[in-house]
Image (tube, rainbow, N blue to C red; front, top):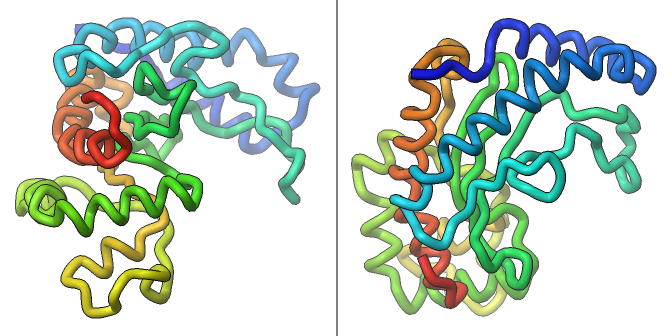
Length: 227
């Protein structure tokens, strides 16, 4: 069994958090590539066949640009925080049609003390939110079979923002009103640092993606996507 990340990965990320500047990053670019980018690309490559056993329509793309791996550079155009770099590593395992239509995805986040994985759709546009909510109203049994299943609830936490009031057009007394209030439809679980740095990371990620796959499957159905 392979290890991917090491103490040096976390050391680099902690140092980047303390020294978030272009000058510092340029001086430590080799550390970024050796301890974060290249190990992440290796993990993405190794997960690709596992992901196909979960769904033939999802992709693990190890390319350095335009693939699963998030860029380390932050988009600061609309942010008050002008620090240039993310202090974490992330990878999105995406639907084959995600460049054409909004689609749920699987996600892995690497950050000292805050590693996690999950699946779903984050910050969907209002029309996509409404489509998911309408599907939930029309197919409540399928949603309950996934999200309200004891094994799922024990393992995964629903994440994201929610409305304080029922969304327009949906009754306040609907049995699933708390789910209908969701603005994000995502769930996941935390990963211990020791797991991320150890030899069982790949197995842990595949197990987590397998566990959260029923939510991704349901969301795909709501958006007329194959799973």
